[in-house]
Length: 236
Image (tube, rainbow, N blue to C red; front, side):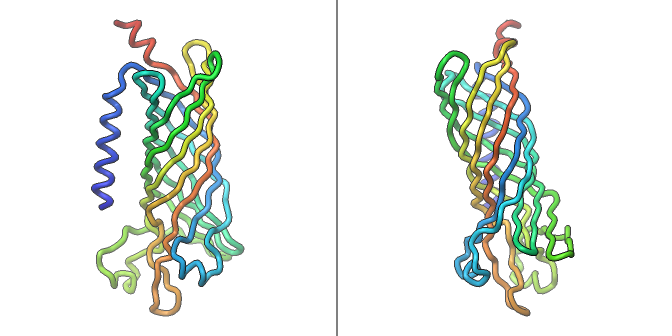
């Protein structure tokens, strides 16, 4: 299922690279994250008496591409590093992700060089480094793919967290046209994880359950983009 979703996502990525040749922007995007983790398993949430962990501050930085054929419908494709996680009284989780979003937006001109962009779309990400701190003990050996062997965690093969994450992004940006065919975007995103980032945890000796943890993030970003359309038209 995850492989099929990833193939569909990559197919859409390639399609959008080729379908919108008239409007092209590329540049850097960076900002701050406010992230936490939702406990979506009801029984586990009752057991620990909470459904959401506290927020932690992270960061995101990477490359952003924008495409449009009519200046109204805009597609964003990016490649980012994103630091996410959560915390509690004696617990802290930090997850370092490589993230690829694909966001479909509508662009509405307001006045002069100012426009609004808003929309939504999927993202997929992979955690290349995770760190869990409980009390004064820090563990970086916390990631593993889910195993088809149901008894694998009894043999210490299944770690508490899954490195894959996927979900939806809801995006809102203020666009400001700059001199020399540059564009500034000031934006806010809400990211809602759909894929569980947790594996089975040992609740009591030899009794395991998956808390169904899912990422949640509020991000504030600034993007500085170069418009490639004019350069290409000048070369024709």
